[in-house]
Length: 497
Image: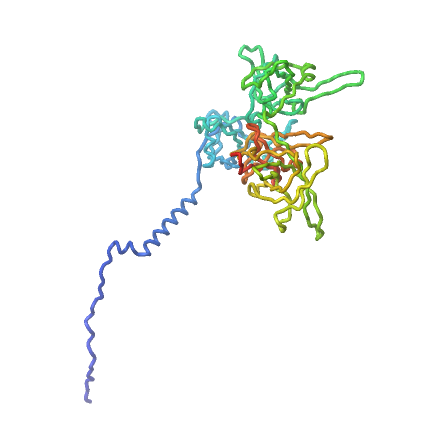
């Protein structure tokens, strides 16, 4: 067998040649969009990580004689708002009290002042009322009363055993009353004028020579004008018993005076003009009143400036109920203002249908004095502040002559809640009078641009009435009604500023 070799004509592979390129410089790498995109992602990640870290305020230490069930995680509150958190609760080294370590919110760092006060809120039921009822089911919390902003900084505090008696009294006139005995008085006892609380007892102690009892009291700011150099103070503690032919009469100033005691005062009329007194003035505290004091009581205006006259606005608005439309009447108070040739009515937001034009077909404004209400023709509504605040300014097209009109310069833009009162004019048989309701600055809490009022009084009949500052007698707001309760809508634009 013959073998034949198969010849192949395969071509040999070419010699490999490497593909080369020039190395990119550093400037070219930095110019790449990928590097910039990576840098942006790193920056965004760092910002998100920083924002996710909880902001921690200053740490403070508070010592209390008793814990009253306080535990880690309980809040620190001021005016119902959480401003800090309890970190640890432990016994002190002497085992005669507790030490509380807490962390405040960054916004509450201003509380680290020398005269700031702390106390534990717990349920307290007594004849004078029920306090701390929310802690009966929920957790305890530490309440705080801020110190003065210019006081020295401090991180260690001695807590109080209970709320200080002046916590809700606000700023006012502080006096010293000197008595022969305690007379059943206790801190927190009310101080009244004709039965109306106008202040309270702060402290009780012996005089330096131990011959008298010194009682420190505070008169609320709206009523400090009532106290003059000839004012008379007497104790109203306990229960008065009078036995006569007609039977037995029992008298008591108030339930609080039965448990805490009480003090009353009046200012008799004087032949010579008397002036208001300042802080620290010393008065004698009498055990009982003299009949001549009340018979000759002086008439003392609470306001130095004249209060503005208000008008009563009566109108109707269309409402719908189950498909039936009817007119619903409303009544509010208001203040007539004139700015040049422009005549306006400052009041609370009037009810009207949103589907209609921003006009009210007819408003009745009750004239001062006697006579029937007259009709003001179409009143155009223009906002003096945001409508959500509940304050409005109505532009009037005509007005009867002789009605009380005030200058627009009476308005003032307040920066924060002030000592004030709400006023309105009431009409009787042939005459009109101005009545007021005092509002302390501590009763007002700023919320969403308005000042919520913590007063429990029913002020529904005061809607639209002007709010007047005690300092200068100018109008700083209007009383309005919100879903959360009664509030003051402050003036935000005033031609007088």
